[in-house]
Image (cartoon, rainbow, N blue to C red; front, side, top):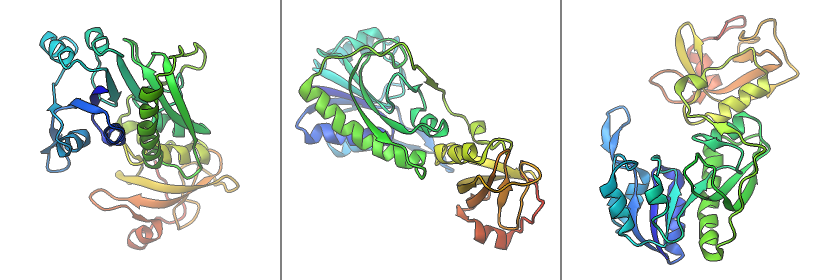
Length: 303
């Protein structure tokens, strides 16, 4: 088929590669414009931009498309059979949704209608879901409300982070979109029951509330790794927590208080042993290395 591909982050790259490997003609790739990133704020192209350029595909980077009629006309002029959308980052207007012969198909990283919205991977781990998955959806003008063509589930393990689940779902997405285009299954409307929304994450979502259970905090740490990252405060210094072990059978006199000298912290229920930790301007390190350089004695309070 003649396809338009629309995506921006790493999550979308396996799908682009899978479509090319399946023999589809990618007539254009749409992605977010290059933007400053990193400590040096150097202008960087998106992962999809890099992948498309390496494959010799035309790349288009409009800053906005919703009300740009010239862009709508250029999009329609590509005469695509379908557009495949994977974490593109811009809302598509009706004129673009309807332009390809088969419309626009979205690769969404959840089992819809659960976790519509911006952060389905992180939200599924933080909420303690037993499984996640990928939905191939026929896009409409709503927020992830379109009918579903295919779904594939994957279990969420007790060791999964947003990073490991992201990589697994990205690979599933590539495989599933190829199937959807080949099989063209009937799109099934989403049920009205079971709808949840995954909000746009911000840095403050990572702040640990030690009054919660050790299991809840463990899921927060894993679900927000690598971004925005879970953190706590020690004497007004931000400490980022990279990994921890929940200890439901242990306890302490007060939530947020160290119950030993090895970074085991009392929670509202149980305790949490911090395994990986990061100081500002430093790399993530093992907790044992951290306490050798900065003691955190029993009775120290984190907040």
